[in-house]
Length: 318
Image (tube, rainbow, N blue to C red; front, side, top):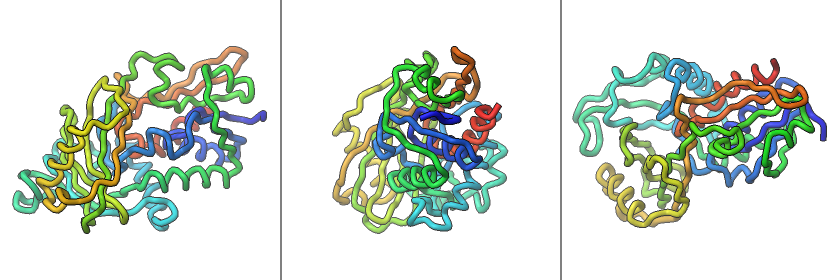
């Protein structure tokens, strides 16, 4: 079982980091408590867009590096789950975005009469939209094609992994509260509703980063993903019927046909938000090993996954 690196965590952050290392020629194993399609990442709405993530000074570069990767993967959307899709960010202006926005091709301000629903400001864009169950399975296959080994295995401490590799990468998300331990991590609950797609082919968002409620829908061929919530310090994993009804009602204010769409299911996930922002740093392990912490991506893990993976891989390599 000896290898160069063990990545603990099999969500999008762990998979991107492990794949980056394996494609650099290292012997890498992923230890994941859950199958990739059972991780928090599998619940993500997964539109590329920097949302609820810090530190602001780093986010732009991480997001743009990831955008470049998704552009390449979108060449084969059926296989990768990544597809260029047009849509509107309502209640958003260019002035409130970082310098990264200038690098997003086609991002433009809308006139008030172009913004759908009860909104007056907005931006139009064509962005990567990721079908997460498909994408996570694709990433596992890509990782294994590079020689990596995926093992479903829970850990109670990083010393377990350090017994088999000189470098351990902590991509455990919210679980790092206990494993690191890091009390700066806090859950932000997100609830989604899946409905039959009534023919919608563009995404829509209206998300206030300070509010507990958001409005968005993301189209896939067989379903429409409706959202959502951003409930701080709420760890309930069961879907709340009243919340689900409110989500459908908010989305139907923008596209009335959503009100009659057949409900297919509900999803709940806990975003791993960290006070102080994403943590990517090294600490020593007993016996001379090295632990790279890589967690705290909040609601933007998909958006920054590949940029952050490059940084974490550089630290893993010393």
